[in-house]
Image (cartoon, one colour):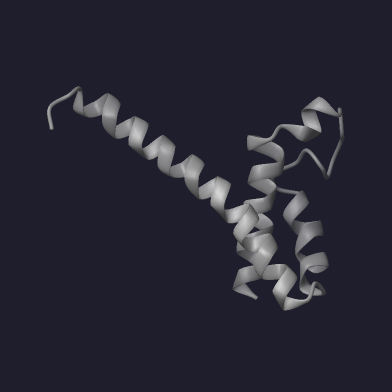
Amino acid sequence: MIQIIITAASFTVWWAVLSAIPQRLRLRKPFDCVICLPVYLAPVLYFVPKPYLDIITVASVAPVAAWTLHGILQFIKQNLNGNY
């Protein structure tokens, strides 16, 4: 169950924020809403077979984790100003 929640949240961040596909295609709610999309996506993911859910989880968590890590490293780099 926690995997479904993490997958829905990660896919939504990737879909709506990182890829900006809804903005380019001019899609409306729930496809451009970071809060709305996981509500509709989680029940769908509940019925996806486990092997496919694992693939979707890895494919959606990896870019969000990389984006988050990049932001953290940029923050550290800006605040240390070469004093490391």
